[in-house]
Image 1 (cartoon, rainbow, N blue to C red):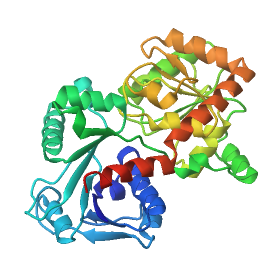
Image 2: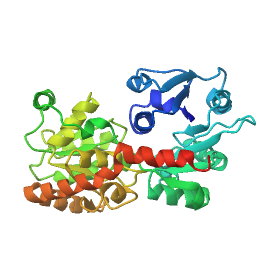
Image 3: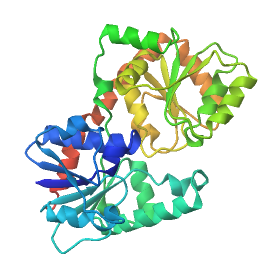
Image 4: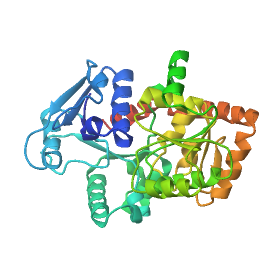
Length: 365
């Protein structure tokens, strides 16, 4: 089969949608090398270069012109005589010719409908219009969690038969054993505390980092945070200054994927009290790292965390505090839950995900 992808996010997004796109193409090319995988975009970048070096993965520049992604990319895929076009981030091209091609779209979340306060009026309207168009045009829709599937049915009025849940995986760095010298070098480079709890993700309202900072106030538990700072960071900074917590909360910058994998492994507890996620990749990164996880009892997070993560009410920082203290003081409980979590997270392994994707690609073909 020849499978084409809208590769805008593959080349240009550093996190979320970019990681999803790169991982998906990487695992398909690894486990199903007999197919040809074509990345369509206006240009390519250094991101994903290792994947593009594979003999069955190619880049094709899309036709030039205004709105070429929306108006020309679909026809470009058809000119390639592709069997499948896969929109990896909730969008499909608007124009096609009569050449048969199977259209698949991945929908990650509908957070902009559930939590409109986090988005501008214009962004909400554009997202909704694009998503509605994409699900109408698609032959098959991939939802990255059961939660997202239910939201697609409810908000986009799509029949359940058209939607398949295919979970996401995570970067291979989190599944590898890093050498001792690298672990020591990461410890000293970032001056990590001897013991700490960890939070990873964009520092924005929805991710709810302030609740973690409030939870560790009046304790001696250090917190390490890795994530891009949004406007919401100011709120956290003010709270830290007011409560003289500067030495307790450590914000790291310029962390590579391999360094992040080491930091996850070194953490005693991973805390992720997000109000809502499409899937919550940091949770499975932590579980693959054998680090016990505290996360919200909301949205899809229990799907990612499994039965042995510890669940909290994200609106209640005292609940978060009591769960952190319980695990912080109880090494055997941390170990027990981390081992169970590691067994659970194997369902998000590359091969299992590649198999599900290929089953969908071949459906009715």
